[in-house]
Length: 84
Image (tube, rainbow, N blue to C red):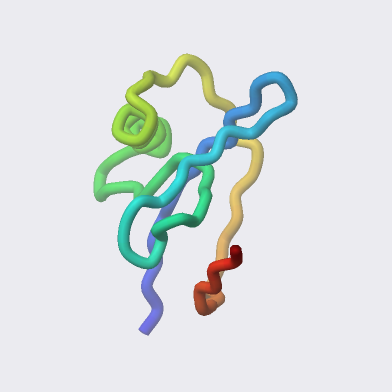
């Protein structure tokens, strides 16, 4: 079964630092990601980015440029390991 899911992420850079958000539940708990999420049906990429930034960071979108697009046919599954 071939399922296509479109996701969008923001790479926010300030003072040579990249902003990451920490997952807070389920499998993603304690992993770090760039903010973003799934594009809902009928929603543009920019609207998705605006919505996700509001949900995850309580902030709005001022300016955005699309730098690249990555298409993956499948995801690599991995097991979680915590280190002390």
